[in-house]
Length: 248
Ligand code: NDP
Image 1: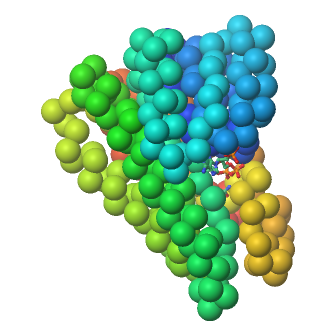
Image 2 (image 1 turned 60 degrees about the vertical axis):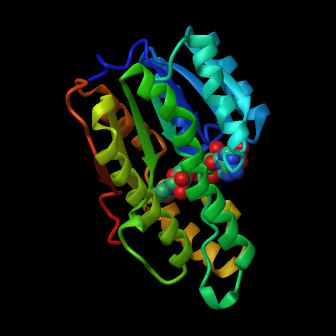
Image 3 (image 1 turned 180 degrees about the horizontal axis):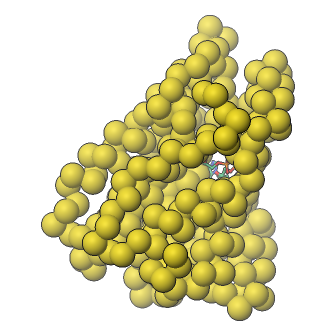
């Protein structure tokens, strides 16, 4: 399944932990050159070194996806060093779940900034190159919470519904440029995501659940591999995956 991955230049946001990190390792093993962005530069630099030591190609640059100038630099780096950008994996995201009546308004803002504007900043940075190349692939990480809403998920779900909406809108517009678009909606996956939930009761309930049923982040990496590795005339537009035991 990896025949259409070797030699591709793949930019990954949120590559410092969890699913982004797993995807970076997996795609680099399959022969892609990966360009890693996240705020924790120590983590992505270490990962890039590990990939290089393993014979792969990787670069890292500190990137806050809420800053359009930094996201542009990330994508520019890929083009400067590797000559093109074949895939953008807009994966950075945060999930500080809470009931709305707790009025964690700063967290609402932050989710909108990272989960929606961060994805838009990625699209704005990569699209001009992909148009010029007349090829490219934009993969956006949404969520099962972008299909289903539950108590505590209102704002997070709203941001992931938005990711799905803007990815589908993009799909309909980029046909002339031969660009593919994929929405990946994971279910429960064991990552650092729950560490940033500030409401102790909400965090504990989620940790209990994800701890019991959650998949490893490599599950996401395999899904991304599947989407990219299809022949260029096949566009995998949306994938939902869950732990088999997940009811939601
Ligand atoms: P992690 O917390 O392990 O990873 C999140 C990544 O996003 C980190 O690399 C983090 O890097 C990065 N990030 C957060 N804020 C910013 C920012 N402002 N700028 C750049 N990078 C940022 O969680 P996951 O791997 O689980 O999350 C990856 C994606 O998957 C997210 O979009 C999440 O919403 C989604 N998702 C996760 C599910 C799960 O069950 N785990 C289920 C469904 C969707 P750093 O802190 O270094 O900046």
